[in-house]
Length: 593
Figure 1 (cartoon, rainbow, N blue to C red):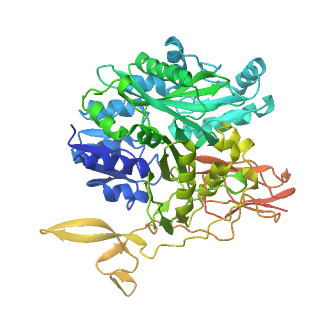
Figure 2 (figure 1 turned 180 degrees about the horizontal axis):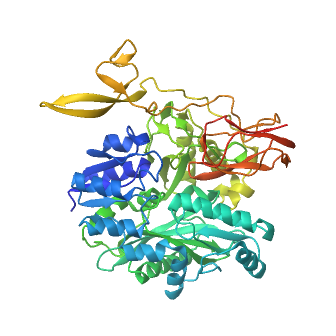
Figure 3 (figure 1 turned 60 degrees about the horizontal axis):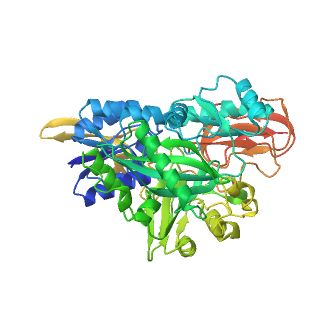
């Protein structure tokens, strides 16, 4: 077994991996960006190394910095978590080349399954049917139009090297193809570092059902059970459960066997998830995620297995230790992803900021996996998942009622969260009767009528610090040391004793503006952004004529693109931003006269 594991990730999944490692007596190493210096995963790890930078590209996607931390720490294994480098074959290969174990599949399997196009080909060769689609990279919008005209609309454009709904756009008609392709490629490039896309037929009322598989180094493969992940918005999951409700056991067995076939066909090892779409009694291969899934806790709850521990054991060379017939599933588990988003009117606008109050739920068969505590800041630069609330019940309705109780106990202030949407969905008779699909949340659930007030701004934390460059002597040797000290600490006449102030901002500061109230500004013509983020595209210029509801610019926040629209018709009097500008909540970006 490993002696020291470096977790090449952040947030909830880093905390999750660190906890299991500690239970197994394995030392842990965290890495962190400038913004995550005081994050929970850093506080829990035995050691922590700074990567520098703020954005993911500058920190958690900085291969050289991570390799440097591995060498400096002496870690003998790396767990990639999910997202970031978890499905990057080059990263896995770089880890192996320095003699360190990558806790995941071999690079060759990641290459096959990480590319959604080659994964479709591999599944087909294994005898597993996929959704009708292409196996070549889209070169122009005209290809999308031709495919839609031949196979029918709508068409789904998807990132070839991604998942989780990032870089995915649904095209409803030929006129939308060019803009959708451009937006999908831009988002994919930012999220995964690759812009290649492919397309497939967008099914009308499917359920999203996935199979958790494990394969050891001897080639023994098993499926642990399925998860229904059909409750989604923006093609991203909100609620997951296991087992899938109203799901024939014969289909379950066939899907599980198909998932193992797909894994074995590409020489897979360790944990993986094979995703399918299920409609009218038939299932279709969608993709394979070559990593641990966000929703793995629901499988843990019904199987009583620690999947991270199982990952460690397989990566260290141990056999599975059980067969398909040994797997026993009991009861029903539901997971709600608590994201920093405001679900008001079903818009789910990102809501970065400082968590001023956090009260976790408790009770029988209730679990909360979180990467944040009260006082921590949810940054615009990373995924907005705050926590995962998971419950178990003897049956689905017992689990559903327990989740409603646990959600009611959860208190998070300072940022908006998806909890009101979860309460609405879980209380809906369609969900209770399992009459939902991947389109149900947005098309049927009635979230457009949901009213959620914006959160009161948390303000700056009382213990905010500033970076100071301090001259120090250790055993007679002079060092220039960077310290993070409370503002004014050691000040004499406005300057700290023996120190020079470095040009750094307050750690964790979040300048929320209380007057921001949505993507538009009530017909005033002063178009303000509802959240902090980065302008990725400006679509109007001074003097242009615009209509109410027309998109004037595109704002990226928490890895999601958001259209900022005109609140009235008129002429553009002023454009205050350009692509690449960082803006804060409530900043005016366009003025319409």
